[in-house]
Amino acid sequence: MEILKLLRLHQWLKNFFVFLPIFFGTQILNKESFSLTVLTFFAFSILSSSVYCLNDIMDVEMDRLHPEKRNRPIAKGTISIPVAYTTMCVLLATSLTTLICARLYAVLIISVIYYILNILYCLKLKHFPLIDIFIVSSGFVLRILAGGYSSNIKLSNWIVLMTFLISLFLALAKRLDDTRYYKEKNIKLRKNISRYNTEFIQLSLAIIASVTIVCYIMYTVDQNVIERISNNYLYTTSIFVMLGILRFLQLTVVDMKSSSPTKIMIRDRFIQLCILCWIIQFSIILYI
Image 1 (cartoon, rainbow, N blue to C red):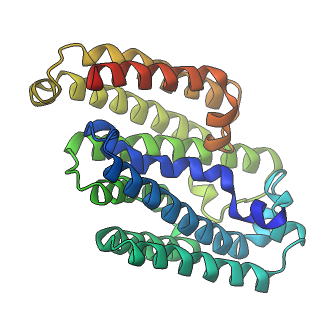
Image 2: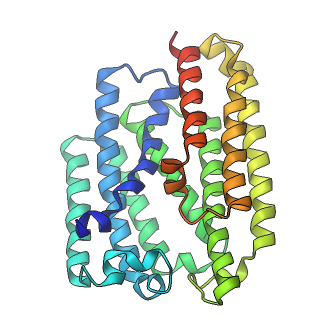
């Protein structure tokens, strides 16, 4: 059970970004594309769990100061650092071997880039403000690139841009929780947290949220997109995107629940309903 906690299985939700290319590319019903994307999903999920092992090893002292993170297995002492290192290496080998056996060499290269970038993040780059959240966001872009190469679908500029923006938005929201804790307890959960403050992050969240919504609307009214899907009503899906983003802002700014965007997605029924309605409406437009 403690090993499963170390792997952070709930964070695998992030890796569903690999399915975006086949969804937007109307290939989700293609058995071969879907099966390769599923394989990529699990390979990337195992790889990301390997990164979490290293992150928990490097952050063990900081985690012990956090009200929630102190319950992580390494911080709590239920899993030793040598066991964590061993688990990290086994997960890394399993992920890369899976991709090699499946002959997904382009995805393999992307995975190696993702892993190296995250190793550098864990060791040093996460201590640089702004650079840290941009690296986190680039990880999501690498996920959709992996999904695109696994299904042989060329990604549009829109999907890459929107993925980066929405992940940047979520990363900023997570930093907001750390700044509040630092302000209340005078305890740094991140070494660079003094270079952030509540006002800066809330302003940045507003900017990124606005740009994301505008970007999505521009995508839905792009003439090339309309011609490709042969439907003029894609813009109607914008309402669910706006509702979802505003709801997340409400939870982050008003309710002060921003410590884990993934857990918010799992627990908040309003956001889940927005995502479900968006998927249903988008599916009808693309596939019916």
